[in-house]
Image (cartoon, rainbow, N blue to C red):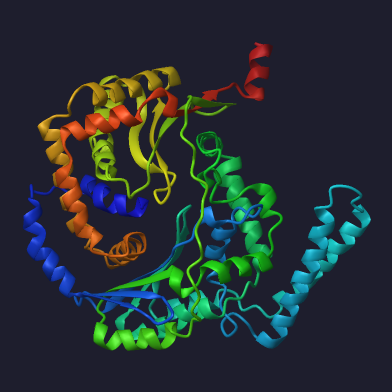
Length: 512
C-alpha cells in the first residue's frame, strides 16, 4: 500500500488546502461513486471504469496481486523479471515467424537446462563439458533471435498515440500501465489481454543480464543499497520481506525462461488481476469490449497464499557496514500490516515527524541542530501487505556522526511516547490527508492505479473514502499509545554505514 500512502499523504506536501470536515466530502463521494462501474467477469477478473470526459484519453492499471514475496525458493527476482518480459510481445507481435521461433525457443530451454544442470553440480563438474554446453546454449539463443522484431509491442502502442508505457514491481505486487486516446480502447483491450493470454519469453536471457546489471548498480555498487539489503535481512529472518525485489545474484544466474513461464501461469491469472480504467470512457460501451477480449483468459482459482509470519522480535539487532562512503543511519521497528486498526495512527506519526519543512525531524535535525542533510520517519517499509516496519533514517552532514543521528532520532521518539502532540499538529495531519484524497483524483494514471490497488487490497475501491473515518478518529492519546507500544528497544533493528578510508586514501596518508 505504499502507493496509496504516497497519494493520500505526500500530495499534501505540494499543495495547501483549507481545513475540511469529513462530512464535506459526502456530496463529492456520492458524485464520484456515480461515475464508477465495477464488474467481475466470469473468469474472475475484476474491471473498474471511472468516466472522466474532460479530455479524449484514458489511462489504465493492470494490477497483479503478486510481487517478490511470491518468488519461489531459489529464484528470487523472478517476479521482477515478469515486468521486463511483459513488453516482449506475443505469438503475433514481436516475431517474424512464430511457428519457427517457438521451436527455436524450445531448443534454447533444452540447451540451458543441460548447461545449468552441469553448472550447478557441486561435485565432479566437468569444465570442458560445461564450456561445450554453454556454447550450445548461446548458439541456440542466436538462432532464436533471428525471429525477433525488437520493441514491436511498444512501437505499436506509441504509433497509436500511447504514452507512459511503464511497469513496476514491489514486494507486494506488480503493475502495468500507460495511457491512450479514447478511440483506441478496443486496440488497447486486444493488446493488453493478448500479452496475458499469449506470453512469449523471448530474449529472456538478454533481459536477465539487464537485471543482473541493475542489481550491480542499485545494490552491489551502492553503499546504501547494500546497507538496506542487509538491514532488512536482519529485521526479517523469517518473513519473505528479507528478500530483495531485484533478487540475489546466484538466483539471477540460475532461473530460466521455463521458470518464468511457470510463475506467469501461476499468478498472472484473471482471479489475481484487477484492471482499472480512468478517462473519457463510457462504461456502457466499453465494458462489452473489455469483456470480449479479457474473457478469453482462462479461469483459474486464485493462488493459495501462505507466507511465514515474522516472529516477535525480543532483542535489538544491529548491522554495521564499513565503506568509503557517506555515513548513513537507519533504524526500524516492527508493526502490523495495513489492515491493523492503528494503521491511520502510524500515518499520523509519519506526517507529524516527516511531512515537509515544518515537520519535527526536519526542524530539529536539519534546520535547528544543523547535523543532518536529511532525516525522516515513515511507515510501511519495505511493504505493507504483510507485517512491516516503521523506519527512521538520517544522513549526517560533514563533521557529524551516526551516533548523533541515533541520539536525535531517539529524542524525537521519546517525545512521542511521553508528551501529546499539539492540537495544531494533529489537525494539520487530518487536513493534509483530506486534501491529499481530493488531489489524488486529479490524474487519470494515479486514479486508475489507486482504484486498482484499493480493489485488490480491500475488495472495494470505496476504501478511498472510508480512510477518512479512520483518520478523523485518530487522537493524541492514540499516538502516544502506539509510540509506546511500537518504539521499544527489543523491537528495534539498526543499520549503520560507517565511513572507512579508501585504500587509495590510506596509502596517501601513509606516504605523508
